[in-house]
View 1 (cartoon, rainbow, N blue to C red):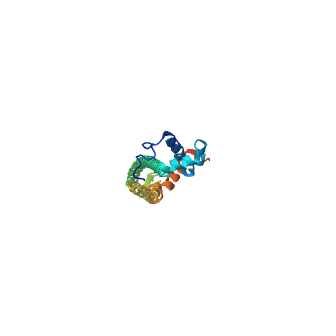
View 2 (view 1 turned 30 degrees about the vertical axis):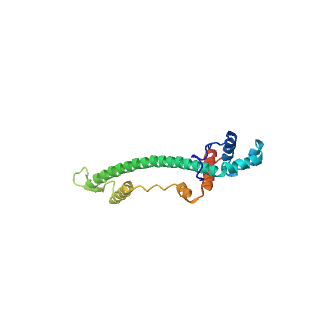
View 3 (view 1 turned 120 degrees about the vertical axis):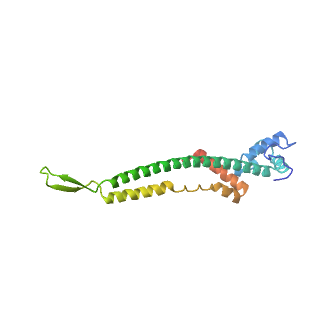
Length: 196
């Protein structure tokens, strides 16, 4: 940024005429399609070129783009953080629920294992004893133990770390004006949605 610009650069500068500043504001809002021609309805192009040079419109507009990009990135980061917090809380609640299931299933398995594998039944004559299998098998218990093991490992697993937003990387690698255009495009997309 030019050292003698007052901060913030996109604001009206000391001794900048009001009409020059108003024209700059219109120029600033044009985004990547910034041109002087649309402003020539109000002022001659020669005058606009003088203002562009004297009041450093290009540099000030780039500072504006960077500012918008920073605001959008902060908003995006805040929204991402909020969503991550919501899902982290849901994940933690689900892990607690899974852990309760694990404990309940473990109690069931313990109860099943304490039961006999077979049952004896005496026929009415009192002499004949019939031995029958119970309604469960060791295979059933093995499946329950495997399920408990899987649920337990899943419930106790560390949550995966959240990914850093792609925009942070792009902000570091792109020129401010290109990044500003990307931000504008994303803002338009988020406003228009997928239907456009």
